[in-house]
Length: 379
Image 1: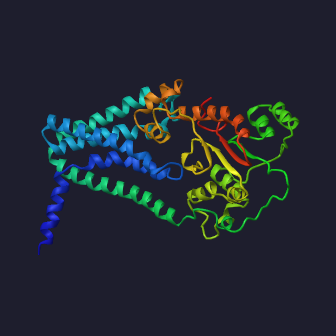
Image 2 (image 1 turned 180 degrees about the vertical axis):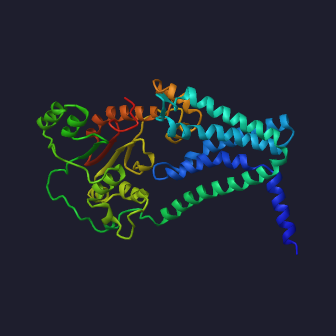
Image 3 (image 1 turned 90 degrees about the vertical axis):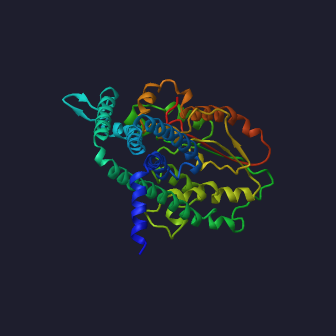
């Protein structure tokens, strides 16, 4: 007999208490994390969430003082959050749209139009007192659904991650490779220039003749595979396959073709090749790259530069989807305060330290992942 009353109480709370600004502030951050979980860490959202929650609280409090209504203040705060967080996505969709020779996606036009739309909606809200309780109710429910969907994606990823193998099963068996020669085992260097095309493709597509570079490599004793091609178009697939000496579908036969590629990360970080060589006494040495979640952070030696941009890659990606995109696009020439500056420093540091690696005693497996030919282009 008390259920209807409780239902009315709950509905009253949803109609009168505007908690939607905080959920709408969190949604863009959590959803971006959910989309990029295989390349970033969950902790990357902590600072953005703290800043947005604090900002939303300050804006909500100021508007409450001005409007003398928590409901109106909540609606206006959410409207400002929509203005801030949606603009970058809107720009990405319209930046190439042209009408009558005019590019609509330029900031000078789009930002003004987008701001005017938000102002008109705000003006309508201030004049529509009768609709405010229902709008508060609706936004509270919608914000709960949005954040719940993103949290479900994140939670599902981590639940699936629990079932991911931490090491390739075959590599936990006895050593399958051996070194019987009396001389010390040779050092092994795996240096990948991510995104670097083969010579005929570079010449036909980009008009670049790199024959002098390849000829010099051959003079130094390298073998150049002139007509080579990768088995996969994505870095994680290709590296996991190479370091396990198998096609990815053979690494775990129970996985479906549509499986998220994040399951390959353990196969890359604790690969068959790495474990076999470590059992032979090899020392694993790696260099940091922009894909932090892929770095072999438990290797014997991990080279990391001390340089760091003001923003992490995740934070920069997040800001590029907001109205801050206007500022970022104008500051591309000065990258020292952006996330890509970290990649710039890491690359120079790796190239500087690499000549010192041969001096390290004992056999070594050296993995150097350079993204100079791959976006983000920092040189």
